[in-house]
Image (cartoon, rainbow, N blue to C red):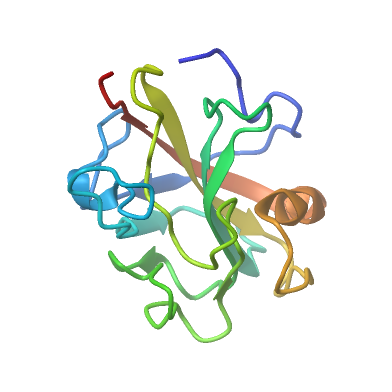
Length: 179
């Protein structure tokens, strides 16, 4: 793992809580959350269950992102991005990030990830590259609609929502594939 801090250049904001029945903060991704698309044995690209609480007053929507800052790309790798989750929603079911997005609340939608698929793509660190961190973030936003186009990248979503983030909830999960 590198010491790349994905929040180092972002404004500091309060934290709230996110939990998961799929994985715990500091834990390792289960096989089902690894990437079948990228050929990880047992990988099924199933998005994790997430529940959150304690977002600040004034939260009008949420966004969820999953990012690998340790990917050997120079810019990390975005595995999942969901925008415009209504403020009344405080959880996503396991598998909500499939290609249909049918498990998402009305109005919420998935942006294309770095594999250019508008869905969750599981962890897939290169074999022998060492452990990778996967930063799962629920962003509490002060706007109902973030206003990025459907083909926008997660990086563009991040840029656009930076001035709207009221708080964030973070889980960090790891994965490693031996050489």
